Image (cartoon, rainbow, N blue to C red; front, side, top):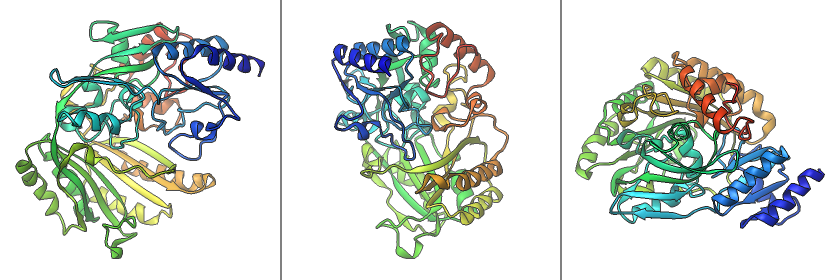
Length: 456
């Protein structure tokens, strides 16, 4: 404890930012990640202001042996955004953004949220694709890969990453891109937080002004679910869709007679001419009489649903890649959703392909460019002690959906063990990540993540 106290005192003396410790006002809020059921008490939370602050925190953690958690937006399913008894390196106050509208690029600090970045870029009619949640930190989602509303049109988030600033385990601040420290640049594009702390990111910006998109809710039948995925796969690359098969929530735009009944809750973005968007969306509307049709021309930032204050869901999640969803498999999804008593249960299906598949699989640490669909099975519940029942349901449905694709997206992994981490990276990618890890972090300072250890 004396070592920890000495370390925290040293941090307070050396940082431009502030250090929050147990007993300080705001400590409980600062240690709480997005997902509930995670109750960890770090000895200090370092709210850093720049790369030099980051380097000081990393150096101190390496020297003291204290576990180091790195937090951008705090959305790690495994709870990696907070340490129990260690130090949290909190990037949330690093929100600088420099937009070169003429050159269509931006330098962004890693504590920015996807929603904040997107709103600022939209003022210039531009965007970079992130995920489907505005409160996610751009640092965390980028190093995982980034699969969202512009994926089929402009690729993963990492496909728009031009360069970055990275603090390595020895406290060195490096600039990385395709020609400067290219091995590190390869690794941060999908390799998670294994090899350093990304503090600034240089993104390409794309022309994205008015899109046609929003929410489309249809009754869930095997024919509608399978038909929706088939249409999404065949649609032009300008269309990206996220399909949630779930019980209808009591939202004001959902008629009361549908509450609790299974629906297809789709979030869609057509990033092309408005007149083309109406034509492309017509087959989806024709699958069944819509329960709610909120598809319309909108500014791109409007696609992010509002955050719910104090929302910290407790859940069990299993992610995988799939090749197809036929009516038989869709029927299985509906049957299994009916038997769960979780407060909320959902099977989320994201059509991939398009620009995601146009990048060679070995170009980035994210490898699964050939996958057609990403599926997430989730059960949300109120009490952590309910976990065994709901985890069994999630695992059983995930097994029923398994089509033999060996991969998983590292950004949607929970605390699932090394075998599942290895599934995120085929053998050649795993070996290459381990090699980069040995070079930049041989003592595994950055171990609170979906870890690829230096010994391989």
